Image 1 (cartoon, rainbow, N blue to C red):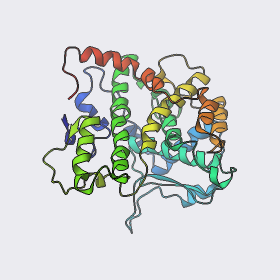
Image 2 (image 1 turned 180 degrees about the horizontal axis):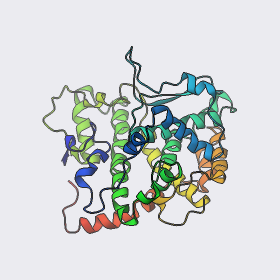
Image 3 (image 1 turned 135 degrees about the horizontal axis):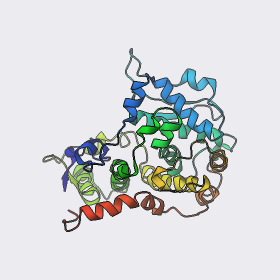
Image 4 (image 1 turned 45 degrees about the horizontal axis):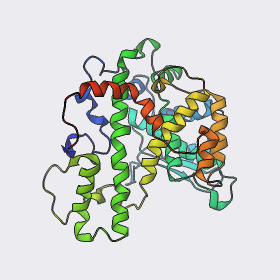
Length: 346
């Protein structure tokens, strides 16, 4: 197994931070960094949120209410401690929607803003539903909406919004680099997304006893992720408690489902937009037809079984990993060549 501290993330849940170390020779440098592009143009955190709103507006969705701009937290307050973990809020089930972030001008936060706004637009779309239906179609939908919109943050989208110079768009030979960078977050996350609740459900049903909390956590991490702690862990350690969602009691399987669903949504949107070309290059920015179909699904909230909501937008009633496999197909071909004859597994 790989030592967890070598993967650039405290939980080894996403590996993108070590991309510069493993970038493919000759194609690894994408030629731009979103954070650098924002800084070069003097963009502020507020500008970044406006860019996020602009994406949803381009799909035909109504602007965010004035209260959103007055009541959201965009910056870390100087005078008090706050939870900076990004979150989206619907205060009154009408139109008092807000995000709570401590935005820094970098690529991660630019993507996170698009994600968090997905929650807000979903909340607003279903606000006419009866109280019990004021939620996503299933636990994964809410997380997947903003994620699939964020997949549309392609080089072409950055050109469209004036952040990237057209001459700087990476050539097709950089696609393996683009895909590897994306996969190190999206694909590497899947086993972690699955194991958090596997562990928690074991705690809840008593099959994992308190004396074994840490031992079992480490076992699941090795079984699913192929990672081990950097050193010996004492039996009374509580490594799982370092993950926000464990002490915060936030269900986690939603993130696993969202990773699968976001690619299904994205592929459906790209088909509706008439996209021709490799899936990972598609941006449906500015497509009102996609926006109308998306809004029809969002307005359903939890009022219908989730397969109905999925079908409304994608035409399919089943969750499937096929869209994700299609997205990363060129990378898979390349990785198969790179790994030929090498030992697999752990």
